[in-house]
Image 1: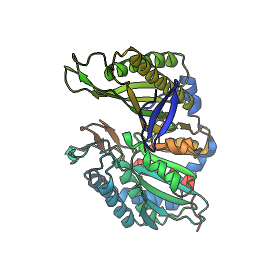
Image 2: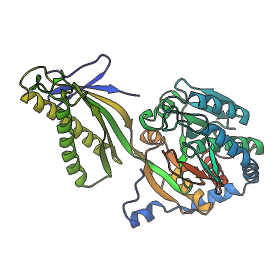
Image 3: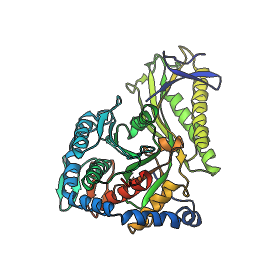
Image 4: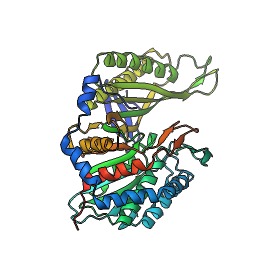
Length: 446
C-alpha cells in the first residue's frame, strides 16, 4: 500500500510504508545542587577581564550614555511594541527597526531576503564578527490590540517583554557606543530576526547562518533576569499529521475506514511508547499531543482527522528516538485500521514537519559562558545556567559559541494578552550586554 504522496516532498519509509514528509521552513534546572555549583563556577581570569573592561574610561562614558538615553530607550520600546509583528508578518516592525538602526549610526544597515534586519558596526581589525540579536516577531495573531497601557510604572501590552525590549536594548547599545566613540576590534552585527516564535521555527536565524556572513560568536537578548544565562538549546520536532479516508454516512457507509479511530490509536500508542522511553531516564525529554480536529457532523464518518504534536529534548539522540516512536505509531495504527475495514479505500496519511529546532550546548567552562557569568557577578547577580529554546539553538548546534542573555527589568505574563514589563534597573541589562559584547569583540586601542 502507498501512502498519499505529493510532489517536491520528502518521503520516509516507516514500518514498511512510505510516509509523506512536508519540510517547513522551558527552561530546565540543573540536575542537582552539586552540578549546579559546578556549572556556575567562574574563573578568576574572566572576573578580572570584566573588571578591567568596566573601568575603561570609554566604557564608563558609554555607561553614562546608556543612562542619558534612558527615556529614549523607553520611547523606542513603546513605539516598537505598538507595531504589530504577528507570525510571518513582521515587515512593518522590521522597516521601522531598520530606520531606527540607521539613525543610531551603524556603518551599514540592510534587510536580507527572509526579512531579518542587520546593522554592521565595523571593528578596527575586523578579524572576528560578534552578533547581538533580538527577535522582531511575537506570538500574537493579526488583529491583536498591542497598544501599550501604563499602570503606574508598569507597561502592559502583548509582546512588551518578549522580545520587543530586546530590540530597544540593541538600539540604545549602538547609539551609546557611537556617542562615546567606543570602537571594537572585531565587527559587531546588530540583528533583528524574524520567525523565532512558534511555527516560525527559528527561520530567521537559520537563514542568517545559511546565507549571512561568517559569525564567530552569538549573543541573543531574549531572557529575563540578567543573571539567568541560557547555554543549552532544547531541541524540538513538531508535526501536523493528517489521516484521510473516503468519509460517508455513519449508518449507510458503515464499514469504511475512520480517520478519527486511526488518529486516536496512533496517539495512544505513541503516548505509551514515549512514556516508557522517558521513564528510562537520561536527558530531559517531553512530548505533547497538542491540537486535534476534523469531522463534519455527528452522523458522518469523517473524511479527515488531523493532530498537531510537539516533542522536545535536551539530547538530539533522545529527540530522534521519540520521533521514531511517533512514526512507528502512525504507521501501525493506519495498518491496523485498514486491516479491519469492510469496504472502501484505505486510509492515507500525511506527516508535515512544521518545527525542527536543533540542540546544542556551550560548555560552562567555555570563554563565552564564563564571560557571561563573570559579567553577571560584576553587576551583583548570582549567575545560573539553563536550557531553553531560543535563537541561540542554531549557532549552538553548529558549534558556534552562543548564549541567550536577559533583557532585564521585571516582567511576566509572557505569550499572554496581559504581558507586562517594569523598568526596574532596566539600564543594567544594557550595561551587561555592552560588557559581554566587548569581552567578545575586544576594545580597540585606536
